[in-house]
Amino acid sequence: MRYWRRGIIGAALLAAALCPPASATTRPTSRDQALTDGCQRSDLGIGFDNSPQWVYVNRDPSIRMASGVVRIAHASRQDSILQHRSYDFTANLVPSKPFQYLIAGSPSAQTNNYAPGAPDDAEELGRVHFEWESSTLPVFAWPTDGDRAALWGSWIWDCGHWTSSENNTGGMVTGEHSELHPLNGIAVSRKSPALSARGESETDVFVSNEGDAAHAVEQCATSTANRIQPLAKSYRFFVPAPPKPAPGARLEYRVVKQIAGGSGSERVRTEAHGIEVTVKLHGRQSVVDYGKSFFVSWSAPPKHAPVALRVTLKSILIKHADPNPSAPDPSGANWVLYADLNGVWQLLNKWAPRLTMHVVDGERIPINRTVKVHVPHGGKVSLLVQGRECDEPAGRTVLGVQANLLYPCPANTDELNPNIFDVFNNDDPGTILDVYRSARTAVGKHASTSKATVNFAGIGPITFGDGTQGQGDYKLTYSVRKG
Image 1 (cartoon, helix red, strand yellow):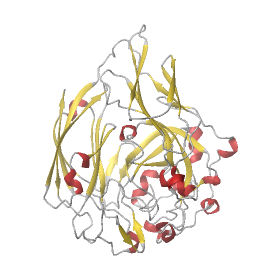
Image 2 (cartoon, helix red, strand yellow):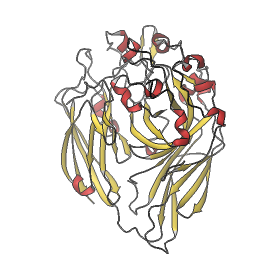
Image 3 (cartoon, one colour):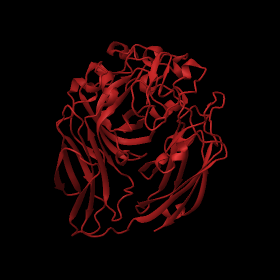
Image 4 (spheres, helix red, strand yellow):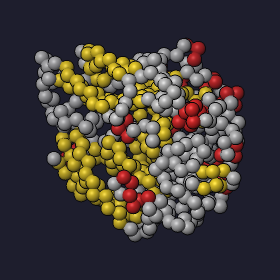
């Protein structure tokens, strides 16, 4: 997640493919290696598409693979208007030991991925940040905080951020961050299999040769044809079974197709405590993709059945339509909000279109939609809501450059931030993060107000904005019942 201003195996998920040669698995520790690899440290150059936003680490376009635990998954607040057609889905991987070389920099010197910076950089500290455009990566494969995942993608430098300050306008030079961006494959092993009523484990998989403009920029060729990225020969991952309920129980599995018209095929090998899956998808000159979910269980029922919950999102009360009134919206505020309920993601604007239509202070926007999830025995219930106010210019020419429409934001043809370094920034309407220790404690009626900063378990305070915007900007009412 770097915008115009910045622009092995786990116990739950095995991924064993695309092992690079030993010479290619050395952590980059030089603060300034990104310059050798092609970054130019020019905010204006990146903003006007004259300098690359992303370049390959070691100038090596090889597909890299990593596995580990996902932390702080969310939709991006803002993105480069010239290099995107939609806003990114972003998250951070705590990689297993064989893949820690992907984290650039020095912990002791606090450089690159280990450098403290702007408030919304905290999620990336000491982790492998990864991104894929949201119109490419379907929401069924978006991981949530704490899931395990295997990733395949391009190992790159994000050229848009190289100092410890906002917009690179001061501070210390700390060096660019390394990322996996774009992905070409992801396999998500759910810590809380919300879609299974039978106590199955769940792994959601998406593979695609659609690399979007990020791949084209990395290839130094921004034509539409160069958005098609190469694929690995195969994608191999392990779907673990849940605990065996009885000695004589037999392993069972089922496969659910998640996208219409998908390509590719899978080979499944049954093992003692799960299934090993190998997916093959042959790249072409046109877009091809693969999306399926794998559920593993036993012939005997689990000792404790999951608890079914129905979560009804009732309404959103807008308290402050403009999180940053110092840069007013002449024609009103347009919001985009996403909800993540135990790994079930939803673009709320699809249920509440009014969010995209100039919300105003004091307006109550109805949602009245119900999501059914299944909570494993002893599992928690987590609801995350976050997004953006669509302030980036879109559908107009700004400073001689045509600003793209980035899905799902509408056109913004009249607001222009007077600060040149903030012209391509979106405001932060704030975040709601409600966590209940069990299904039982989640039951009831709830009203939660957005905050500028929320606490992620095991991590601490995280903001998706500047740490000030979004405090008390909206209130969500919802109810939870069994059934």
